[in-house]
Image (cartoon, rainbow, N blue to C red):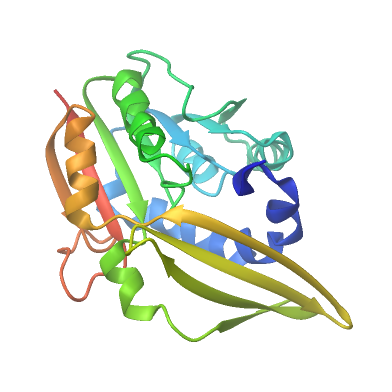
Length: 245
C-alpha cells in the first residue's frame, strides 16, 4: 500500500494536516485571491480535495464544485462541512489518475501540494491530462505546491509543530538528486509516539510548466503567491495556471 492510501496518516495526523488554522487560511484565499476569482457559477473540479478546505468555500461563493479524493472518511468530513455551511459542493470517491469527466468543468484546481504523490512521474502527468480532458475549451487549470526552489530555502533541521496535547516533529530528506523528498513525522502525546512518512516528487517551476504544457495547456503562467505576485526569490508558493486551447 502506498503512503497516500494509508488512512492512518490522514486520520492520525489530522491535527496538522487539517487544522482549523489551515481551514481559515484556505477560506481567506478563496475570498481574496485574484487567482481564485472565477466567473460566477463556474463548474469547479477539486482534485485531491481531502476534507474540502477549498471545495467548500468555493461552493459558498456560488460555484458548482465537485471534490474528488480516494478516502471516503475525508469525503464524509467534507460533505458534513458543506452541509453545515449550506454550500452545494458534491464529492466523489475516485483516484485522480483515473477520474475524468470530459468537458464538464470550467476550472480544475489542485491545491496545497496535492500533486506529485505517485511513484511514477507519468502517473503525475496523467493527473494533468485528466484535468485537461475534464475542462471545457478555454477552461483554467490551477496547480498550487511547494516547488523545488522554495523547498530548498527551508529544508534542513527538524521542525516542531504544536498540536492539541502534544507536538509533531518533522524531518525532511532530499532523495534521488532532488527528484523526490521524504518527510518523516513523529507525533508525541504524553508517553506515546506515532510515526509516519511520505515520499513525493518535487518539481521546479520549469519542470512543472513543461508538464502542464505536455498535458496540452497553453498560456502557462507561474505565480509566487496567491496575490498573483511573480515567481521569483520572494515566492512562497509555486502556482501554475494554464488554459485549455
